[in-house]
Image (cartoon, rainbow, N blue to C red):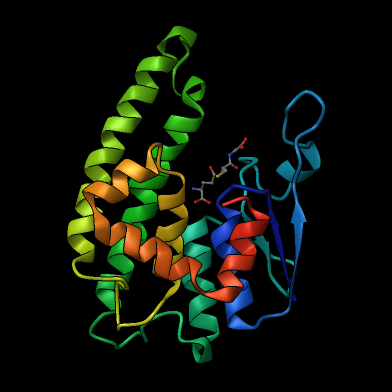
Length: 207
Ligand SMILES: N[C@@H](CCC(=O)N[C@@H](CS)C(=O)NCC(=O)O)C(=O)O
């Protein structure tokens, strides 16, 4: 039994969707902020950075880092077909783009949503946010080129990579303009959301 610790509208959404798809036994616990808006100290004992998601594994060990969790779960439940096998020719492409998403777009999203955390100078926040928007524009352009025809990234079927990408696409500052510019990203997003298990999780997260 897995325990997913997350919060609505955060990076735990993709993990939750994947857990539903692989047919694993799991429960979800939302980590709410306290009255002062802080992450509860008890959760920091699980994840010292106070970030979600965290996945508690069957032996009570803790796994953090959303992309790593996605890769781990998809590999551990191969029957669900959520990742190319290790020896598949598309495995390299899968790992490349999964890591790309976590290290570029996810990080730009954090600068966009929490700009005040990226400087000791509060007045720098608007500039940090504007730069995050500009960076996301070029990062989405690279993603769109990498995706090509789509709608799926690898092996002509939905994998954990597409789910992770769809979550990050849902956080785009101007999704309508983004999909007009890169229709293949819109098609990926729609194809992922058409899966009933994913749709249920997306709805819970208000996506
Ligand atoms: N690198 C981490 C980033 C996780 C992260 O920053 N999550 C955000 C929500 S999407 C968070 O919990 N931020 C701290 C906060 O909300 O105070 C991952 O991929 O799991």
